[in-house]
Length: 495
Image (cartoon, rainbow, N blue to C red; front, top):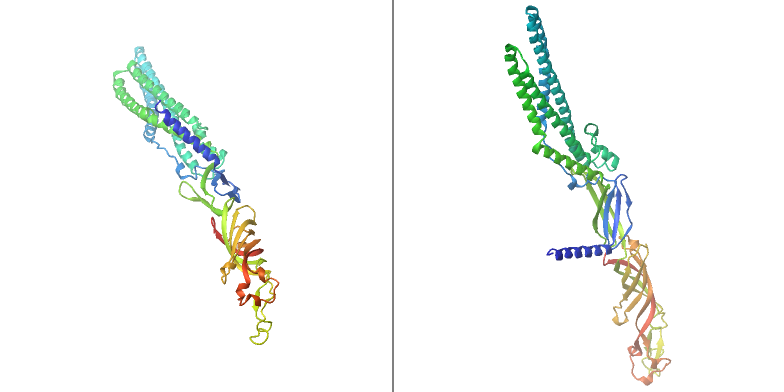
């Protein structure tokens, strides 16, 4: 019960991350290794989403350096060499027995001619002994041949480790049929065509080997019994005994060597290796031929750039994906631009000037004549440099709508500077000059000089006394409109 709080904590953490993961947007890019083409390659991805790259129709174990699995294989040369020597020995002994039988037949034939009928049993007993010995040796030879085939089969099964490793490392095996054929290329000699058969075929083959070894031990004992039970002439018994003992000693030694190779720890090693090959081949064949998506990074800025290199298990580059770009959308941007705007209206209708008389006379009767004149200058349009700030949500459209504010400074009189609010159309940020241009329009407002109300409609201002031209006007807030063209300097989230 003490472990329950910890378990609940783990479950809560897992639940939290699962819930969080569901809110994370993902964009998957897919590459078909068999056709060397992208099957899924979006032009856009939601900004802030995780971008994943995966491969299909690919042997994912061949192109993943950590996927190489090797197993140690023991050597079977000792047992096999003893088995081959045993076969040669038994075959040689069989020939010797045959030769001895022929010689014995010749000797007994002479004895039979010279001796009486009581000598006939000696001939029969020797024939029987040699015939039984030859038969037992032939049976032993047959069992050795069975063992030999079993050993070859076991060795073939163990050598399939190399076939599996080669299949793991081969990027061209990216579909199931050729991959299976490569893994079970030795099925003709091993009888293994599925991962589940590795252990069963090994165990049945080892059982056959051990059964034959047990049969050979029985036959060796029968060779001993045959000699013990035979009533041979003393001379032949003295000659046959040492030879048979030597033969039996050598056969027993070879049987013991082979038994050791397929029992105890050696047998466990064989079984462990076969189980390992079964697991590895099953894992290899059950793959979906897809390299699971891996997160390349999070989408940020106006685009993301992706590249990749696939390296095989030997460190050789098999495929290179050149850098490519995917544009983003949905992110907020603040850009800055500078350009030229034409302000329409809002500057005051005219420019006013104060003159003392129509001829600006400094003496004479008209010197006291003071009047206000307009110079009739057209102030409807005014071109000015402007600094803009643009806010927008990045979209998939080529033309980008923006909310724009601007400042048109007047360096001769700061109070005459104007602010602009409106909309504009531009393009996603680019190093291309034409795509940096932004067109805008909207309203503008600022202070402008306007004639004071008390002076409107008057011509003679002598009643106001001495008056300066700057005293004729007041500052008033004026609305207007603007059109602009500007160059995007970039901003937050991109260049």
